[in-house]
Length: 183
Image 1 (cartoon, rainbow, N blue to C red):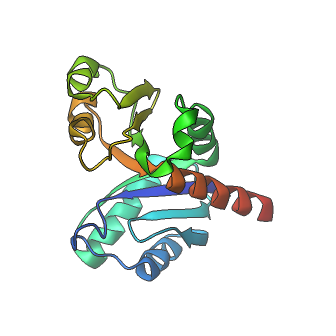
Image 2 (image 1 turned 120 degrees about the horizontal axis):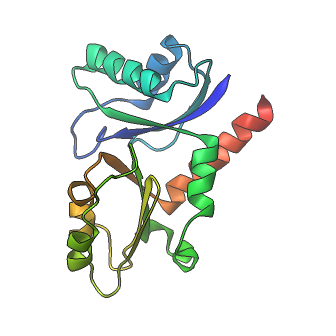
């Protein structure tokens, strides 16, 4: 059995693509996931599953949600090690004191030709960014919602991503550790 951290993009945001967490748990269980735990309504889950094929499992989850709810969310699966490595690689440890303003953009693949100069042009003097492998770190102490850079990051990086703030990332890692210790 493998531990997976699922990051769902765009569910339960702004009244769109509604998927109650109880239904998400049932969908995951129907697909063979066990010990499913969710975190906040915007689509985060930690579970064990017999496959290590993240791409195939993410696709199955997305298609099952489409068949039941009529929309097909982007699902990014991470291993516990991938999440722990993203935490350990945080280039802005001072930002951990302001965790709602530190975001990690988890990318589907390593960008081959990211347009970092375009993001640099949008960066305010207070913002800090760093791309490390498949994670784009953004510290926006003036607020993510007001950040022009945050709004343009996916387009400039050229690959799908889903953002989580530091609080969420740390909580998901904690949940995965607990799941790992119970195995």
